Length: 164
Image 1 (cartoon, rainbow, N blue to C red):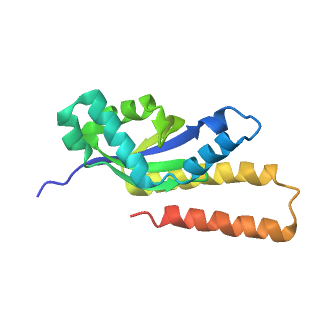
Image 2: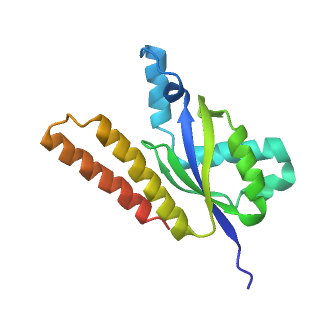
């Protein structure tokens, strides 16, 4: 039996409201709700559509081996499982992707790993650094609020630790 060789891509999604800071309006609030409701399946579908439009039918058939393992909607970080022979095509498709569920997006591939364990470790490191930045910005919070934030952080880290 042949083992399928895969790579794990750690990606970050930067949406337009995060790229351009402006005064919130009704339009930007509805866009923010759409961005917050993005799931792993939305990313998977958009990525498959992008691959099929760029590389045609043969790549589309192979693209069904793609799997978005984790997507953290607050940190906007995801781990995507990719067949090794499709890694370059998927990285290209991710960088060319400009919209996701109607929202303008810029996707960056932060790292590429050969195993789920190293991808998980890298994602935890990335989450911790982004959450540390958030906690430093909210340093004036009350003790009760800080405890609630840290519990929420631990829940998000545990989700990454329990990745299949």
